[in-house]
Image (cartoon, rainbow over all chains, first blue to last red):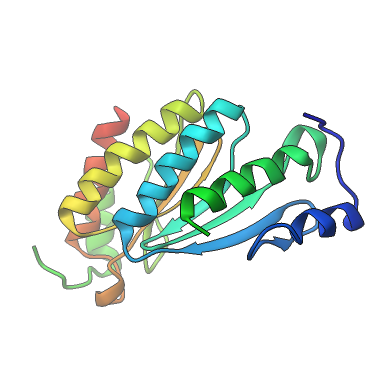
Length: 96
Length: 96
């Protein structure tokens, strides 16, 4: 998968295919909300397995039932197709 | 376990029993560093089980192999003995 960074127009095109993700310039971001900690951490665990398999990892913060996710391709210095692949996988796990 | 908030002196006494935790006023904080994502997320998973059992959950952020943890007792509005119990459990899991 290409590690070329996507410009703002390309990011918008990709974001339009997803739900609830926003453009943070050097990253795409979403806050997932669950019923409780167990459900939030269950989501994180499933997402972690996908991330490890992709060798592409999220920056994320968990406070009880919320998980704030930021995705960027650090070694490319911006957002790439990899980030959108992981974003779509996370949405699928969360049932979005 | 008491949900009374601990004052600065009491926090210092408790912090002195741990390694690498700092006083953030309304929380105690530590950044754990691991070898890779797998080890970092393994730590988080074990800590999540302890937190769920305690019904006391961390605020935490994971970026690849680092895990930044902040512990506070939200409903008490500060740091209580519960936070130090969870802090000690996390240190034990991390092998600190």
